[in-house]
Length: 237
Image (cartoon, rainbow, N blue to C red; front, side, top):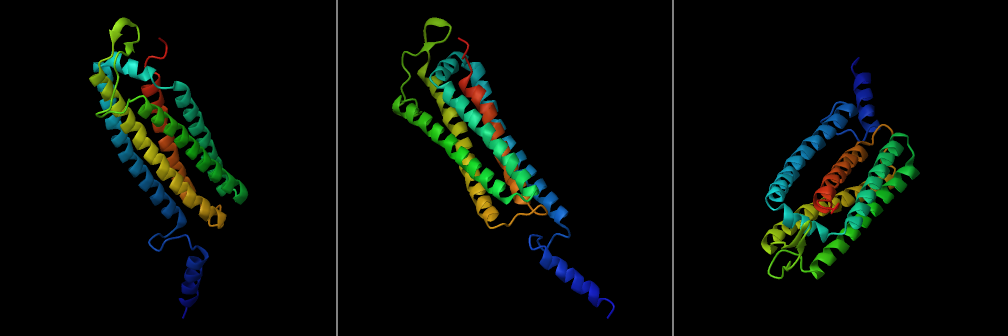
């Protein structure tokens, strides 16, 4: 009979913490497990994008004149605008995590909405760039055209279309995969927004906001590397 109060107390503790899954002893343990899982996932993503970056750098060393000529066809202003958009979105994510930790539900919802909007702005600008490349026939394939494009710093010399096609293949693969990650991120933050609207997050439980923020920051960092590699190869000439 002496064990009854303890059992009742344990039961009430589980009811009082509905966010705590049954296979975790404490909320902190659950939070650490979620963070570790996300960091392991991001490590695999680093290896994934790292292979693409290495491929790009190898071909850039081999065919630098053509890569510089291809970069000239990109609008670096649009790329810079998208960089600023993602930096602002990282700020709204940080503010969302802070708002959740301080029980500022309204601010949390506003920051999540702002992050989603900035994500769509990024995709809209990227879509405009893709449209321009299709119009200019710079999409690798049967319709690809890159004739008589001068090589920066080499008067009278023109880019090799076959080598130029490698650049644009890498451009569409890397930016396309990044855009897919952005779309996934928007989906994640839409779910977080719905849960935040329902007041599911408290100062004692806002792990999903933190985990979603880690993913979003990673996607932003990938773009920080893509922008100079793809857009600013030969900007000074």
